[in-house]
Length: 119
Length: 114
Figure 1 (tube, rainbow over the protein chains, first blue to last red):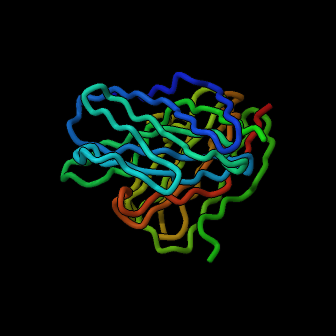
Figure 2 (figure 1 turned 90 degrees about the vertical axis):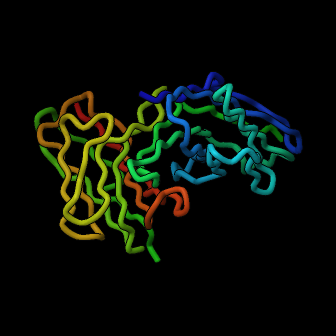
């Protein structure tokens, strides 16, 4: 079975600084998808960034980027130029592929990291 | 465009009562799923559906039933509520293969079982 571990329950960063959230996972699959979701106090789940395991290149989305280390099974999220609106719970998630190689729509989530951006 | 709509937003039940959490989406999404969120445990998949008439179990299906009679609706039924089912429940949907069509989440239902 797959597991996702986020070892930092809480983190704090000053506005405009950079912060990295850690995520490790365990799987015997060779191909899969990885995601970071953000959950602000509104409780809405928002996709931040996603990575296909067979792609070596790290995904980036504006101020958000990942450091994907497949051999180490590590998928960290870097937030640059942190903004007050980045304050949220961040979840790392894993998705294995189905029998025919497509997505399964079944996510396995980590326990989350609560990020507070300080003014 | 309403997206994924969950009702009710809050609910309190007594042990042994039954109820249905409603989920509707207006995006013609094939995939729908239910997760529960508990403190310190992240989100866990309860049940999911890949299309009308097709459902399957997730990680924590015990105590819950689902059906998918239409593309739009995916209700979650608690047959006999237990305090262990106190949680926040999220419904999610996507158009097709989830990587290319990210999950859209509803705003959640906070359920308390006393």
